[in-house]
Image (cartoon, rainbow, N blue to C red; front, side):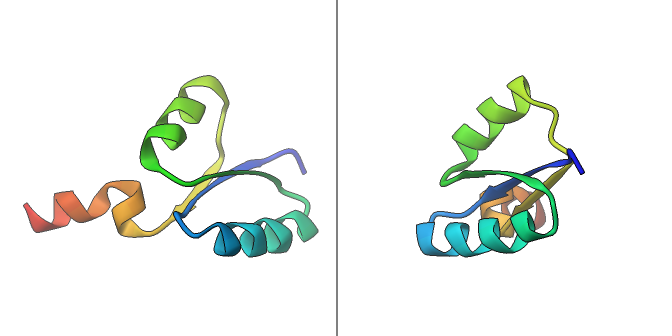
Length: 65
């Protein structure tokens, strides 16, 4: 499986744990701690899935408005 998963979380311990879990399933994992880094990576690499909190993904602002 060559699917890329991008995981966004400010908590590095959670990132390590999620990387471990998804890697065991055969996914290639990229982790970042902020939305700006995530956007930069998405502009350079084809990402299949993005995992993060609504705030990390920028969804929260759209829901509140």
